[in-house]
Length: 163
Image (cartoon, rainbow, N blue to C red; front, side, top):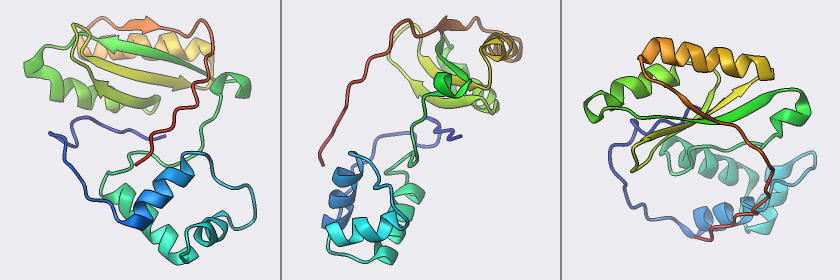
């Protein structure tokens, strides 16, 4: 489970992307080919080699240009559960609370927002019952009340951000 932390990067940085990096980011937003050697197929589509594609993606991850690269699963249809949650964190405690929240294996994402509820995160668990256990554990660890915002209806947006 990816634990992208807003505390890793203190400020936004502009990154100059190579033509190969741009091509890969644009192409892979539509999905990864389902075949024996997907990176070889991708390499063919971007006029590169399988090794260069893998090295480029590893570099984008290590440089945190990509904070996550992997499949998106519907946790509920696999028997698991997830919820969106938020905390109202005093600014002077934000980094410390980020570390506390991210110490839970069930935290999939954690983002800072400009709002009274300034920390938003996703809790992903193996069962619906575990959600409440994690919420309670976060409240106990941080001393802050968690706003639990479970999904009521599924929306598929098909977001594509060309670079």
